[in-house]
Amino acid sequence: MYGLSAVPRAGWADLQRAPAWWRLLISRVTTFCWVEVAKIRHDRTELYTRAIQPALWLVIFGETFTAIRAIPSGGRPYLDFMAPGVIAQSALFVAIFYGIQIIWERDAGILTKLLATPTPTSALVAGKAFGASIRSLLQAVVVVLLATLLGVHMTLNPLNYTVAIVVIVLGAAFFSTLSLTIAGIVLNRDRLMGIGQAITMPLFFASNALYPISVMPGWLQALSTINPLRYEIDALRGLLIGTPSNLPEDLAVLLLACVLGIGSSSRLLRRLSQ
Amino acid sequence: MAELPQSPAVDAIEISKRFKDVVAVDRVSFEVRVGEIFGLLGPNGAGKTTTIRVLVTLLPPDSGRASIFGLDAVAETMAVRRMIGYVPQQLSADGSLTGRENVMLFARLYDLPRRDRKAAVTESLELMGIADASDRLVSTYSGGMVRRLELAQALINRPRLLVLDEPTIGLDPIARTEVWERVLSLRKEAGTTILLTTHYMEEADQLCDRLALMDQGQIQASGTPAELKESVAPEATLEDVFRHYAGRHLVEEGGSFKDVRAVRRTARRLG
Image 1 (cartoon, rainbow over the protein chains, first blue to last red):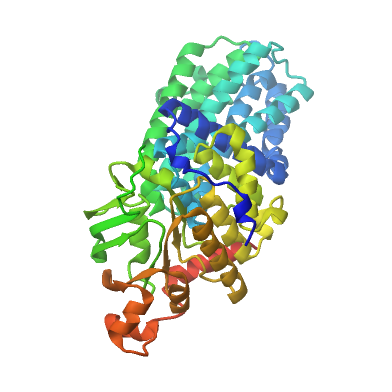
Image 2 (image 1 turned 180 degrees about the vertical axis):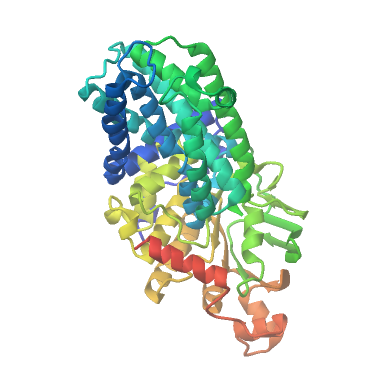
């Protein structure tokens, strides 16, 4: 009738062996990265509009504070000091609202279908979170280019950039799962927007994005030790402009944060879908 | 996994599910035989969708047991999912991807071998008659096309059991007939077992080999459409049957606020 008889449909697909858990995890992560790339290719407007904010931070805030020399920046021009902070900040701003997309996918019925595929919830969340980091990574590329145009001296070592990519991806994946966790608790878009707005600035100010930890008051220093953004920025600053940093500790903290974030959001995802 | 010829495609035994104070599904038992088209017929809010969600492993039942080709839906979730193709009630393809990308996504999520994926995606799109539109964004598709795309997604893993929740809801008569034809030919050519829910009498009568009438969370009667009609009166229609067993008139259109909202939202999203 529809050329069906010409199509061999011998056997049932489920007779194939299921992949091992680690293959499944890699498969889901690459799949959702592929989806994210396809979506960006179809609609690039978000990439351009999202470049505006970091450009303003670098050009206005960065240039001004370089001129007035108000913030100790370890003997480097303030703009150099600040550029890695802006990379992390813009990646954070993309990731923290990721839960909105999941709520939209739930409302559209897409989430139900994804949950009915042979994908454990944790692999689905990990796939989604790492897929989301593609957008943060593109943000980072934009900021690196802008900063270079403004005369920031960044490393030319490709190995440092490779590790920086890992750092940005881990940071973005963590903040995406944080957003998913909040989505799983508040269950609706408006409340998630509100909470997202409310926590981004505290995360930003309780970090070393704009000033070194040493100039913070004691209580803020204490608070910043539990802020994953601090470790992300410490690592990026060390890798990109060569200031002293504790890379193994930074990577360990980010990795742990990701695991915790994936754990908590996968527990809440089913609640969100019902 | 071994072939299990003697197990029914679906074996639901005394399934119950409650949400807070509402008993959505109340001790529902039925069996779907391999190769048949089985319909769950009932008004909106009868518990059809909840029953389906239990069978496709999205909801654990409070009590009772569901097995798919002999495998328990709770204990062997992943193996059961690999045997099922599922199309939920909402039009839920991703509008920001093309038709082909939507199907490819599911080819990846069902772990089709890399070398087979492209051919399988094309085959599935052709089978549902949307190959020509496959490189357009789904946001430009009509409702009937989205539904056929979703069937293409659900067929990508060559499922033994295809589960369709209100497959023709919100479609115009032509699109509806087309979906029916595809479903019928699929059963004929591939031998796929099909479980569908509907609240359209006509659909149940023409499409299904056997039916279960569901109302207020319970199965009120089951059998072939002819058997059900005979059991009520010589010249009875399915609507008479339904009125007889459910004790109230079937609501043909409309539905709860939530359903209407979901349909409108889908329409808006697809632009």
